[in-house]
Image (cartoon, rainbow, N blue to C red; front, side, top):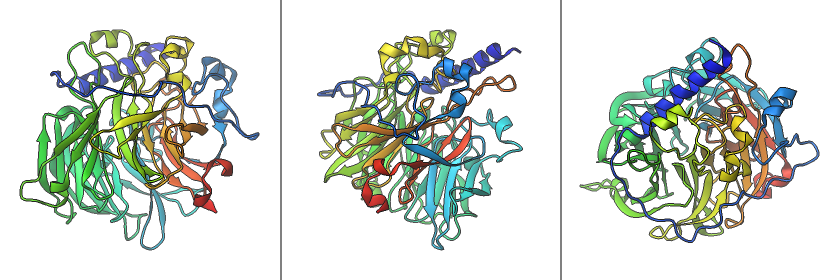
Length: 497
């Protein structure tokens, strides 16, 4: 099979899977309306230092001409430098953890869609969830592969509770999968995690969340239509607490006291409608946190926004004493139906949600206060020549957002987002109404005859941080695990001084 036909086939398979996963439950849904939103403009672009290798086109784009000239192979940096790069695959989460003995580890999932990634992992870093000894970040050393059922294919559910050193995952895929839950202890020696349990207690799986005290692990199944709370106080014998049905929920994040859940809600699509009709759902989970006799998920509020794609996750933060969420949307909001497959997975008029800051100081009245997005995400540009850049037309890749994360809860100063074909993007959020981009790092994969289906960057993971060293860690599904050093001038002084 020639290269263009093989690449098209891969794209069609991914498109069919995406449509199937998002549209498994085609029933009417409802959501609140967007009000008083800021304008949908690109975030002010980073100003790069002299040692940078800046982008050659509009913000976030890697044009086809750069692949042809060899420029793309050199990568793009702005106020960033490479510390190290290891292995050749990546997934959806990267975590940093320091155990009781002082060992520093990175943990990340190595597959975007199991088993399609098998050929890329076998004979290299291996399968499953990967553990790296990061005592020397310039020379990561792989120490373990976690190969229990959920760790082999966690999809977006991998989660680490820092307080207890508990690593958890539920088996998942693009749609949903049987809810096998794996729990590991990293606290003694994170380089060699200890399996505590692997049991089918979650019903169905896809994404997840952890109460900050590490006693409750939450599992969402998206198209499986369930949200399950698990008691992991005794992680060798996790027990279901309660399950909510009839909901298409994605990422689950908790307030520091574990009593409020912030849900990225996909919603239930209708035939011929958009993939996502959801937004943000705020739930009171106090009765679950307190282990009351009849624990329930109590709705508090919902929020929609004007240009939404598929809500992914919403991380709580506090800036100058006020509570916010850093919310990320994934991909573009495609219209479901056979035309999406016939079009090869690309719809120029499909909106890209990217990311935003949401004020939740009053959790009953959430509101969007600013957007984090790139010029390449704007609808006016999606119909232009950028759609022909390598990787741009894939519905599961392209110029869009996927995950954001925060280095700490209070006054994080900067945040990082994986924006797929645009790589890792760094934003200053000290003024939450006026965020600015302050850096980026993007290492696209240049397609070759041996593997034409791997093209462009595939930055999908929620990043991890070591800002005392001014480092961000992330993985790219096409090229592996990266340690990136940030220029001193873009990192708030309290992290490194």
